[in-house]
Structure formats: structure tokens, C-alpha cells
Length: 282
Image (cartoon, rainbow, N blue to C red):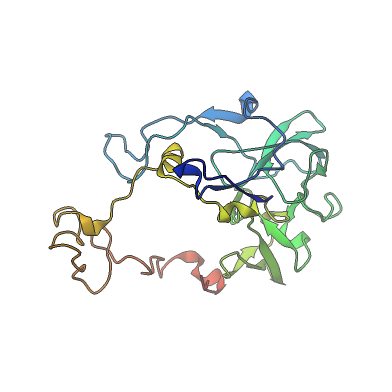
């Protein structure tokens, strides 16, 4: 996948750069199977009282949520990649798998997996071979291989490494745990019984896109963000003063007075701290 540059015919296309989506095989008019989609409605960013609890959410284009099979628990049944589709709810493409028994499920699209390829999940390499798109327990995947959609609790479904172009590397196996090097460079232990899918996720050029204009962000359901320094003192700790006044604190803070930009927020009492071998560097 490459990045497409646009001719600057309008101000909005002057800096616009978007992924080409060459691998997508379905047109915009084709809907997802009814059983695999559901409506996305409701007041975005608000609670049951209608009050804003998460800022900068609202509006956006009408969307339907595609139900993704993160568990990959259909063991031993081969499936064929029928289509590769765009998903408005994530930055990675998805593909529709048609299994030998007629069942259809969406999974995350893996780089170099094309329409017509066969994928499978299994509890050992005797059932599902070691190749891109197949899902196996971490213990059954050799050292050095790239994986994604990794479970943290066996049977719960993949929770880690699910974004465009992402993958984790298996670097060690010891006892009941497998050590992974995550995209953030953190090294972490995961139970060897947890499932993972082999390969690198597609759409790796997503990080190089440029939206070109504020309106495109509004189509995505993101409302404007106002800087605290231009607010009044009642609205933000950075507000007030004459002209471009400094923030008047030892460091930047959130609208609620908590330290921002680099303050560590992970709880020192979190039970999974013992599983982190090396902290991330980025």
C-alpha cells in the first residue's frame, strides 16, 4: 500500500495525503453481511444523563460496526479469504473469511494475505501450519516470528497489537510464559496458552497520512480541541493573563489540574507489573 498525493486544486487538497487502499476488493456500496454488523448510535461522549464525560466526540459520518472475530476459536476448520474490506471503525483493513462449514467471520487483514488464500486456527502446528494469517497458541509458534491480535487471558480474545502495520516478536519461552517484544519496545510475558495470529497487520502506511483539513476530522466524529491558554481562568488552569501569558506552573496540566505531557499514569499496584520484563522506551 502506498500514499496518494493530491493535486492542490483546493485548500483542502493542498496537503492531503491518504493511503491508496489497493488491497480493498469491495466497493463502497457493498454492505457487510447483516449478521456481522450492527448500528452505531447514541450521544457520543455523554453518559446516561446526557452530560459530556469525554470531550471532543460527536457528529461524524453514519457508520455500522463490523463484528470482528478476535477469538479465532474455530479450530481445525479451514477458511478462504472471500473479500478484503475497509472498516471505518479501525485503521487496519478487515477480511471476510468463509469457512468450509459455511460460517462467515471477519478477521483483521494480514499483510501478504490475498483473496483466495486459506487460513485456519488450531491448538497445535499439526492442525494449523505456521504461516501468515493462521492463529495458534503462543507456545506453538517458533521463536522470532511476528504475531498480532494477542490474548492476555486464554479464551477472552485478542487485546494487544491490533492496529495498522503492527506486530510483536516472540523472543523467549520459559515455563508457562512466552516473552514478547511489543511495538512500543516493551518486553512482556504472556501465558503460553494465549492465542495469537501470525503475521504483520496491513495498511502500514496509515501513519503517513495527512488529513488536509479540519472538516475531514469532523467526518470522523472528532470535535475541535481548544488550547487551555486561550481560555479564561475559570475554564482551564492555563487560562487568563494578558496576551500570550505563560502557564504559571511548574509544568503543563490538564483542565482538571493533573500533570500532563509525560506524567506516568500506570498504577504501581497493577497486578500485571510483574509480567513486564522491560519498560517501553517510546
